[in-house]
Image (cartoon, rainbow, N blue to C red):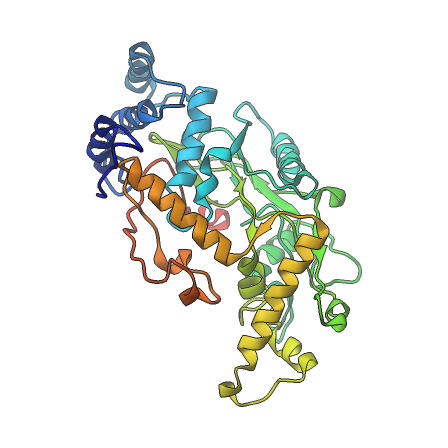
Length: 391
Protein backbone atom coordinates (compact mmCIF):
# COMPACT_ATOMS: atom_id res chain seq x y z
CA UNK A 1 0.00 0.00 0.00
CA UNK A 2 1.40 3.37 -1.03
CA UNK A 3 1.93 6.04 1.60
CA UNK A 4 -0.77 8.66 1.73
CA UNK A 5 0.29 12.33 1.67
CA UNK A 6 -1.63 14.15 4.39
CA UNK A 7 -2.02 17.19 2.11
CA UNK A 8 -3.96 15.15 -0.42
CA UNK A 9 -6.19 13.18 1.93
CA UNK A 10 -6.61 12.89 5.66
CA UNK A 11 -4.56 10.28 7.43
CA UNK A 12 -7.71 8.76 8.90
CA UNK A 13 -9.28 8.34 5.44
CA UNK A 14 -6.12 6.73 4.10
CA UNK A 15 -6.01 4.32 7.01
CA UNK A 16 -9.69 3.45 6.54
CA UNK A 17 -9.10 2.77 2.84
CA UNK A 18 -6.12 0.57 3.62
CA UNK A 19 -8.19 -1.50 6.04
CA UNK A 20 -11.21 -1.67 3.76
CA UNK A 21 -9.73 -2.80 0.45
CA UNK A 22 -8.84 -6.36 1.53
CA UNK A 23 -12.60 -6.87 2.09
CA UNK A 24 -13.32 -5.70 -1.47
CA UNK A 25 -11.23 -8.32 -3.25
CA UNK A 26 -13.27 -9.93 -6.00
CA UNK A 27 -11.73 -13.33 -5.33
CA UNK A 28 -12.82 -13.40 -1.67
CA UNK A 29 -15.71 -15.72 -0.85
CA UNK A 30 -17.98 -13.43 1.11
CA UNK A 31 -21.68 -13.52 1.86
CA UNK A 32 -24.04 -11.02 0.26
CA UNK A 33 -24.29 -9.28 3.64
CA UNK A 34 -20.51 -8.89 3.85
CA UNK A 35 -20.25 -7.63 0.27
CA UNK A 36 -23.04 -5.11 0.80
CA UNK A 37 -21.49 -3.75 4.00
CA UNK A 38 -18.06 -3.47 2.34
CA UNK A 39 -19.61 -1.49 -0.52
CA UNK A 40 -21.34 0.88 1.88
CA UNK A 41 -18.09 1.36 3.78
CA UNK A 42 -16.44 2.27 0.47
CA UNK A 43 -19.27 4.64 -0.35
CA UNK A 44 -18.92 6.31 3.05
CA UNK A 45 -15.27 7.10 2.27
CA UNK A 46 -16.21 9.03 -0.87
CA UNK A 47 -16.27 12.64 0.33
CA UNK A 48 -18.42 13.90 -2.55
CA UNK A 49 -20.64 10.80 -2.54
CA UNK A 50 -24.20 10.44 -1.26
CA UNK A 51 -23.20 9.19 2.18
CA UNK A 52 -24.62 6.16 3.98
CA UNK A 53 -26.93 6.45 6.98
CA UNK A 54 -27.27 3.82 9.68
CA UNK A 55 -30.95 3.50 8.75
CA UNK A 56 -29.99 2.66 5.18
CA UNK A 57 -27.57 -0.03 6.34
CA UNK A 58 -30.25 -1.56 8.54
CA UNK A 59 -32.75 -1.51 5.68
CA UNK A 60 -30.33 -3.35 3.40
CA UNK A 61 -29.49 -5.94 6.05
CA UNK A 62 -33.22 -6.64 6.52
CA UNK A 63 -33.70 -7.07 2.76
CA UNK A 64 -30.71 -9.41 2.54
CA UNK A 65 -32.00 -11.50 5.46
CA UNK A 66 -35.53 -11.73 4.05
CA UNK A 67 -34.98 -11.87 0.31
CA UNK A 68 -31.28 -12.58 -0.22
CA UNK A 69 -31.33 -9.44 -2.34
CA UNK A 70 -31.44 -5.65 -2.03
CA UNK A 71 -31.87 -2.79 -4.46
CA UNK A 72 -29.42 0.06 -4.89
CA UNK A 73 -30.71 3.61 -4.77
CA UNK A 74 -29.99 5.69 -7.91
CA UNK A 75 -27.12 7.46 -6.12
CA UNK A 76 -25.62 4.18 -4.92
CA UNK A 77 -25.87 2.78 -8.42
CA UNK A 78 -24.16 5.84 -9.94
CA UNK A 79 -21.22 5.70 -7.55
CA UNK A 80 -21.04 1.92 -7.80
CA UNK A 81 -20.61 2.27 -11.56
CA UNK A 82 -17.97 4.95 -11.12
CA UNK A 83 -16.08 2.77 -8.63
CA UNK A 84 -16.32 -0.10 -11.13
CA UNK A 85 -14.54 2.03 -13.73
CA UNK A 86 -11.98 3.17 -11.16
CA UNK A 87 -11.22 -0.47 -10.31
CA UNK A 88 -10.95 -1.67 -13.94
CA UNK A 89 -7.37 -2.92 -14.11
CA UNK A 90 -7.40 -3.18 -17.91
CA UNK A 91 -8.47 0.41 -18.59
CA UNK A 92 -5.90 3.13 -19.24
CA UNK A 93 -8.59 5.84 -19.26
CA UNK A 94 -9.52 5.70 -15.57
CA UNK A 95 -8.42 9.27 -14.88
CA UNK A 96 -11.92 10.35 -15.93
CA UNK A 97 -13.85 7.89 -13.74
CA UNK A 98 -15.84 10.63 -12.00
CA UNK A 99 -17.23 11.81 -15.34
CA UNK A 100 -19.19 8.60 -15.88
CA UNK A 101 -22.93 9.21 -16.23
CA UNK A 102 -25.66 6.62 -15.76
CA UNK A 103 -28.94 5.67 -17.40
CA UNK A 104 -31.03 3.64 -14.96
CA UNK A 105 -33.00 1.02 -16.93
CA UNK A 106 -33.82 -1.32 -14.05
CA UNK A 107 -37.57 -1.00 -14.54
CA UNK A 108 -37.68 -2.50 -18.05
CA UNK A 109 -39.68 -5.68 -18.59
CA UNK A 110 -39.41 -6.42 -22.33
CA UNK A 111 -36.67 -6.95 -24.88
CA UNK A 112 -38.15 -4.12 -26.93
CA UNK A 113 -37.38 -1.79 -24.04
CA UNK A 114 -33.83 -3.14 -23.81
CA UNK A 115 -33.33 -2.46 -27.52
CA UNK A 116 -34.75 1.04 -27.13
CA UNK A 117 -32.40 1.82 -24.23
CA UNK A 118 -29.43 0.43 -26.19
CA UNK A 119 -30.22 2.63 -29.16
CA UNK A 120 -30.56 5.65 -26.89
CA UNK A 121 -27.24 4.78 -25.28
CA UNK A 122 -25.54 4.84 -28.69
CA UNK A 123 -27.06 8.26 -29.46
CA UNK A 124 -26.36 9.84 -26.09
CA UNK A 125 -22.84 8.44 -25.76
CA UNK A 126 -21.96 9.58 -29.28
CA UNK A 127 -23.24 13.09 -28.54
CA UNK A 128 -22.43 14.35 -32.01
CA UNK A 129 -18.78 13.35 -31.58
CA UNK A 130 -18.25 14.89 -28.12
CA UNK A 131 -18.22 11.41 -26.59
CA UNK A 132 -19.78 11.06 -23.13
CA UNK A 133 -18.69 8.30 -20.70
CA UNK A 134 -21.95 6.47 -20.08
CA UNK A 135 -23.35 3.28 -18.57
CA UNK A 136 -26.86 1.86 -18.92
CA UNK A 137 -27.86 -0.53 -16.14
CA UNK A 138 -30.60 -3.10 -16.76
CA UNK A 139 -32.33 -5.18 -14.03
CA UNK A 140 -30.13 -7.11 -11.62
CA UNK A 141 -29.72 -10.84 -12.05
CA UNK A 142 -31.90 -12.72 -9.56
CA UNK A 143 -31.42 -16.33 -10.71
CA UNK A 144 -29.03 -18.47 -12.77
CA UNK A 145 -29.61 -16.25 -15.83
CA UNK A 146 -30.23 -12.57 -16.29
CA UNK A 147 -30.90 -10.13 -19.09
CA UNK A 148 -28.15 -10.45 -21.69
CA UNK A 149 -26.74 -8.52 -24.60
CA UNK A 150 -25.02 -11.09 -26.78
CA UNK A 151 -22.91 -8.52 -28.64
CA UNK A 152 -19.43 -7.81 -27.33
CA UNK A 153 -20.06 -4.13 -28.11
CA UNK A 154 -23.31 -2.42 -29.05
CA UNK A 155 -21.74 -1.41 -32.36
CA UNK A 156 -19.56 -3.93 -34.13
CA UNK A 157 -19.02 -5.07 -37.72
CA UNK A 158 -20.11 -8.42 -39.17
CA UNK A 159 -17.67 -11.14 -40.15
CA UNK A 160 -18.93 -13.39 -42.95
CA UNK A 161 -17.11 -16.72 -42.96
CA UNK A 162 -16.72 -18.44 -46.33
CA UNK A 163 -16.47 -22.19 -46.86
CA UNK A 164 -12.68 -21.95 -47.22
CA UNK A 165 -12.45 -20.23 -43.82
CA UNK A 166 -11.77 -16.74 -45.10
CA UNK A 167 -13.77 -13.97 -43.44
CA UNK A 168 -15.18 -10.86 -45.08
CA UNK A 169 -15.32 -8.20 -42.39
CA UNK A 170 -14.29 -8.68 -38.77
CA UNK A 171 -13.13 -12.24 -37.95
CA UNK A 172 -13.71 -11.53 -34.24
CA UNK A 173 -17.45 -11.32 -34.96
CA UNK A 174 -17.76 -14.38 -37.20
CA UNK A 175 -19.61 -16.41 -34.58
CA UNK A 176 -22.12 -13.72 -33.65
CA UNK A 177 -22.64 -13.08 -37.35
CA UNK A 178 -23.56 -16.75 -37.83
CA UNK A 179 -25.87 -16.57 -34.81
CA UNK A 180 -27.53 -13.46 -36.23
CA UNK A 181 -28.00 -15.04 -39.65
CA UNK A 182 -29.49 -18.11 -37.99
CA UNK A 183 -31.98 -15.89 -36.19
CA UNK A 184 -33.10 -14.39 -39.47
CA UNK A 185 -30.89 -11.33 -39.90
CA UNK A 186 -30.90 -9.96 -43.44
CA UNK A 187 -27.56 -8.31 -44.14
CA UNK A 188 -27.11 -5.83 -47.00
CA UNK A 189 -27.60 -7.36 -50.45
CA UNK A 190 -23.98 -6.54 -51.17
CA UNK A 191 -22.10 -7.68 -48.12
CA UNK A 192 -19.15 -5.57 -47.08
CA UNK A 193 -16.35 -5.31 -44.56
CA UNK A 194 -18.16 -2.79 -42.37
CA UNK A 195 -21.77 -3.94 -42.02
CA UNK A 196 -23.12 -3.04 -38.57
CA UNK A 197 -24.41 -6.11 -36.76
CA UNK A 198 -27.89 -6.20 -35.21
CA UNK A 199 -28.34 -6.49 -31.46
CA UNK A 200 -28.96 -9.99 -30.13
CA UNK A 201 -30.83 -9.76 -26.83
CA UNK A 202 -32.32 -12.27 -24.42
CA UNK A 203 -34.43 -12.12 -21.27
CA UNK A 204 -33.88 -14.46 -18.31
CA UNK A 205 -34.76 -17.98 -19.52
CA UNK A 206 -35.86 -16.50 -22.86
CA UNK A 207 -34.78 -17.17 -26.43
CA UNK A 208 -32.58 -14.58 -28.18
CA UNK A 209 -34.17 -12.03 -30.46
CA UNK A 210 -32.79 -9.67 -33.11
CA UNK A 211 -33.10 -5.89 -33.05
CA UNK A 212 -31.59 -3.55 -35.63
CA UNK A 213 -29.83 -0.39 -34.53
CA UNK A 214 -31.00 2.74 -36.28
CA UNK A 215 -28.26 3.43 -38.82
CA UNK A 216 -28.44 7.20 -38.31
CA UNK A 217 -27.56 6.68 -34.63
CA UNK A 218 -24.28 4.96 -35.51
CA UNK A 219 -21.63 7.58 -36.18
CA UNK A 220 -18.78 6.23 -38.30
CA UNK A 221 -15.51 7.86 -39.31
CA UNK A 222 -14.08 7.35 -42.79
CA UNK A 223 -10.31 7.09 -42.55
CA UNK A 224 -8.01 9.45 -44.42
CA UNK A 225 -4.32 10.25 -44.11
CA UNK A 226 -2.81 13.74 -43.79
CA UNK A 227 -0.15 12.97 -46.43
CA UNK A 228 -1.18 9.92 -48.48
CA UNK A 229 -4.15 10.79 -50.69
CA UNK A 230 -4.59 7.14 -51.69
CA UNK A 231 -5.45 6.17 -48.13
CA UNK A 232 -9.06 7.25 -48.52
CA UNK A 233 -9.39 4.96 -51.54
CA UNK A 234 -9.00 1.93 -49.26
CA UNK A 235 -12.52 2.48 -47.93
CA UNK A 236 -11.58 1.98 -44.28
CA UNK A 237 -13.82 3.28 -41.54
CA UNK A 238 -14.64 2.68 -37.90
CA UNK A 239 -17.42 3.57 -35.50
CA UNK A 240 -17.15 6.44 -33.04
CA UNK A 241 -17.80 4.85 -29.63
CA UNK A 242 -16.62 1.54 -28.09
CA UNK A 243 -19.63 0.52 -25.96
CA UNK A 244 -18.71 -2.73 -24.19
CA UNK A 245 -21.88 -4.75 -23.61
CA UNK A 246 -20.84 -8.32 -22.78
CA UNK A 247 -19.43 -7.81 -19.27
CA UNK A 248 -21.21 -8.10 -15.93
CA UNK A 249 -21.36 -5.22 -13.46
CA UNK A 250 -20.92 -6.26 -9.82
CA UNK A 251 -21.74 -3.81 -7.01
CA UNK A 252 -21.88 -4.87 -3.38
CA UNK A 253 -22.76 -8.47 -4.23
CA UNK A 254 -25.53 -7.52 -6.69
CA UNK A 255 -24.93 -8.66 -10.27
CA UNK A 256 -26.08 -6.74 -13.34
CA UNK A 257 -25.64 -9.09 -16.29
CA UNK A 258 -26.48 -6.37 -18.82
CA UNK A 259 -24.76 -3.02 -18.27
CA UNK A 260 -23.22 -1.58 -21.46
CA UNK A 261 -20.64 1.13 -20.78
CA UNK A 262 -18.20 3.29 -22.68
CA UNK A 263 -15.48 5.85 -22.51
CA UNK A 264 -13.89 7.03 -25.74
CA UNK A 265 -11.34 5.43 -28.02
CA UNK A 266 -7.60 5.53 -27.65
CA UNK A 267 -6.29 5.66 -31.20
CA UNK A 268 -4.21 2.49 -30.97
CA UNK A 269 -7.29 0.40 -30.17
CA UNK A 270 -8.30 0.93 -33.78
CA UNK A 271 -5.00 1.60 -35.54
CA UNK A 272 -2.79 -0.97 -33.80
CA UNK A 273 -5.36 -3.68 -32.99
CA UNK A 274 -8.75 -3.71 -34.74
CA UNK A 275 -7.43 -2.82 -38.19
CA UNK A 276 -3.90 -4.18 -37.81
CA UNK A 277 -4.06 -7.51 -35.96
CA UNK A 278 -3.51 -10.66 -38.04
CA UNK A 279 -6.70 -12.09 -36.58
CA UNK A 280 -8.75 -8.97 -37.33
CA UNK A 281 -8.62 -6.78 -40.46
CA UNK A 282 -4.87 -7.30 -41.10
CA UNK A 283 -4.45 -4.10 -43.15
CA UNK A 284 -0.69 -3.60 -42.76
CA UNK A 285 0.38 -5.53 -45.89
CA UNK A 286 -1.93 -3.49 -48.14
CA UNK A 287 -0.85 -0.21 -46.57
CA UNK A 288 2.81 -1.16 -46.93
CA UNK A 289 2.26 -2.13 -50.55
CA UNK A 290 0.63 1.21 -51.32
CA UNK A 291 3.50 2.96 -49.53
CA UNK A 292 5.97 1.04 -51.71
CA UNK A 293 7.77 -0.53 -48.75
CA UNK A 294 6.36 -4.06 -48.70
CA UNK A 295 9.06 -6.73 -48.87
CA UNK A 296 9.86 -10.14 -47.49
CA UNK A 297 12.62 -8.93 -45.18
CA UNK A 298 11.10 -8.32 -41.76
CA UNK A 299 14.29 -6.45 -40.81
CA UNK A 300 13.20 -3.63 -43.12
CA UNK A 301 10.55 -2.83 -40.50
CA UNK A 302 7.87 -2.36 -43.14
CA UNK A 303 5.25 -3.47 -40.62
CA UNK A 304 6.32 -0.83 -38.13
CA UNK A 305 6.33 1.94 -40.71
CA UNK A 306 2.89 0.94 -41.99
CA UNK A 307 1.59 0.67 -38.43
CA UNK A 308 2.65 4.22 -37.58
CA UNK A 309 0.97 5.61 -40.69
CA UNK A 310 -2.24 3.69 -39.98
CA UNK A 311 -2.32 5.18 -36.49
CA UNK A 312 -1.64 8.64 -37.89
CA UNK A 313 -4.60 8.18 -40.21
CA UNK A 314 -6.90 7.15 -37.34
CA UNK A 315 -5.99 10.13 -35.15
CA UNK A 316 -6.15 12.55 -38.07
CA UNK A 317 -9.53 11.27 -39.27
CA UNK A 318 -11.23 11.34 -35.87
CA UNK A 319 -9.92 14.83 -35.20
CA UNK A 320 -11.10 15.99 -38.62
CA UNK A 321 -14.54 14.45 -38.01
CA UNK A 322 -14.82 16.11 -34.60
CA UNK A 323 -14.98 12.79 -32.73
CA UNK A 324 -13.32 12.66 -29.33
CA UNK A 325 -10.27 10.39 -29.16
CA UNK A 326 -7.03 10.28 -27.19
CA UNK A 327 -3.56 9.31 -28.39
CA UNK A 328 -1.60 6.68 -26.47
CA UNK A 329 1.05 9.05 -25.16
CA UNK A 330 -1.52 11.40 -23.61
CA UNK A 331 -3.51 8.46 -22.24
CA UNK A 332 -0.41 7.04 -20.54
CA UNK A 333 0.44 10.39 -18.95
CA UNK A 334 -3.12 10.75 -17.64
CA UNK A 335 -2.97 7.26 -16.17
CA UNK A 336 0.13 8.26 -14.20
CA UNK A 337 -1.91 11.15 -12.75
CA UNK A 338 -4.68 8.68 -11.91
CA UNK A 339 -2.17 6.46 -10.10
CA UNK A 340 -0.91 9.42 -8.09
CA UNK A 341 -4.45 10.33 -7.04
CA UNK A 342 -5.18 6.75 -6.01
CA UNK A 343 -2.03 6.57 -3.91
CA UNK A 344 -2.84 9.93 -2.32
CA UNK A 345 -6.26 8.60 -1.30
CA UNK A 346 -4.72 5.50 0.30
CA UNK A 347 -6.18 3.16 -2.30
CA UNK A 348 -4.14 0.37 -3.90
CA UNK A 349 -2.74 1.26 -7.32
CA UNK A 350 -3.83 -1.63 -9.48
CA UNK A 351 -3.49 -2.52 -13.14
CA UNK A 352 -2.69 -5.13 -15.75
CA UNK A 353 0.59 -4.05 -17.33
CA UNK A 354 -0.06 -5.90 -20.58
CA UNK A 355 -3.33 -3.99 -20.99
CA UNK A 356 -2.20 -0.56 -19.84
CA UNK A 357 0.96 -0.30 -21.94
CA UNK A 358 -0.12 0.69 -25.47
CA UNK A 359 0.42 -1.77 -28.35
CA UNK A 360 2.64 0.70 -30.19
CA UNK A 361 5.67 2.62 -28.86
CA UNK A 362 5.05 1.23 -25.39
CA UNK A 363 8.63 1.83 -24.25
CA UNK A 364 8.28 5.54 -24.98
CA UNK A 365 5.47 5.94 -22.44
CA UNK A 366 5.88 6.39 -18.66
CA UNK A 367 3.99 3.13 -18.05
CA UNK A 368 6.68 0.89 -19.55
CA UNK A 369 8.97 0.73 -16.53
CA UNK A 370 6.19 0.53 -13.97
CA UNK A 371 4.85 -2.59 -12.31
CA UNK A 372 1.29 -3.12 -11.15
CA UNK A 373 -0.71 -5.10 -8.65
CA UNK A 374 -3.31 -6.94 -10.82
CA UNK A 375 -5.72 -7.51 -7.92
CA UNK A 376 -9.34 -6.75 -8.75
CA UNK A 377 -11.72 -5.10 -6.35
CA UNK A 378 -15.47 -4.59 -6.15
CA UNK A 379 -17.37 -2.82 -7.59
CA UNK A 380 -16.11 -3.84 -11.01
CA UNK A 381 -16.93 -4.87 -14.54
CA UNK A 382 -16.09 -8.57 -14.86
CA UNK A 383 -16.10 -11.11 -17.65
CA UNK A 384 -18.98 -13.53 -17.88
CA UNK A 385 -19.62 -16.55 -20.07
CA UNK A 386 -20.74 -15.67 -23.59
CA UNK A 387 -24.51 -15.57 -23.73
CA UNK A 388 -24.67 -18.34 -26.34
CA UNK A 389 -22.84 -20.64 -23.91
CA UNK A 390 -24.93 -19.64 -20.90
CA UNK A 391 -28.30 -19.91 -22.66
